[in-house]
Image (cartoon, rainbow, N blue to C red):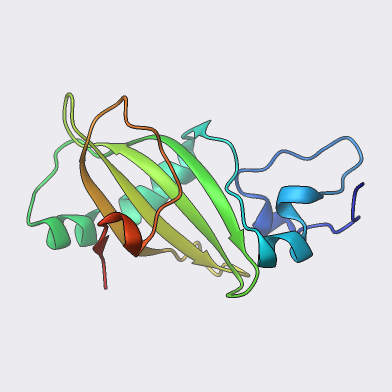
Length: 143
């Protein structure tokens, strides 16, 4: 049963509008606070690539590596109502067969497209699934 909660346009990153223009279950506020679930994995678009470009320098600094390739491949999002932000998990190709997963967040409402790198999972490959992750998964904190 739909809760009728509607998200602002800025909070819709990674979610397609349903015909009813309402969101329920995995994106309703009550459920998100108790049981947050990430969106399905989607192909990266220009907006996601732009987020990657904004954090590329920090990724290179934290991993002590330089990347000539830094192309977003896919992404998924998680709305964090408790902290008023959207968490974006991005699979980034950093070499021919090399990938990394980034955890980036954007505070809501987003001003000027500001994003912040939160964590990095390095040494991934294309077959590694893009999962929601946090410090418990051996991620490198970006702070």
